[in-house]
Image 1: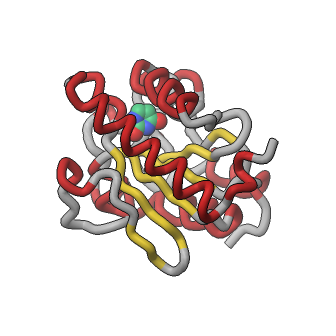
Image 2: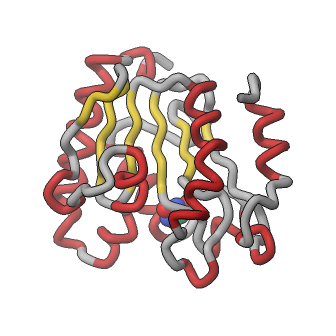
Length: 192
Ligand code: URA
């Protein structure tokens, strides 16, 4: 356990624990404020994220920013966004179990330092790793599960919404459920 974000980021950025380090352009550690009470966790960097070194900056990321904006959340202001794996799996394939397990200690350490009240898991891979390995995201998205005092919500991945615009209404509904929970358990997120 590293006790500060700066050192943790530095160590993570020189990681060679798995083969993804051989093909990555950048380690994508995370973006936002570690002082928040809300974490968003995706699957892993895609092409644009690998190039720019920041999570969710491609097409799916632009949609995520719009959904966040709809409920007064902002990656540069009041949330923290990261991924299960910090390096891009080639051709955007799913990260393997081994890759996820090699990387998970960075996420655990980030979570310990942030000490969030709410964790939103974007898509099946993150929801399965963090909430329930057998999760059915199409059925269970938008439903909070409490674990050790942290409220966790599986959400549809923004890339899935881009592929099927019919999911947009359900996605917006989940963000509104999220806003309600924030106001209930960590209203200070909306203070400034
Ligand atoms: N998809 C993810 O799950 N994470 C990103 O950072 C980008 C796309």
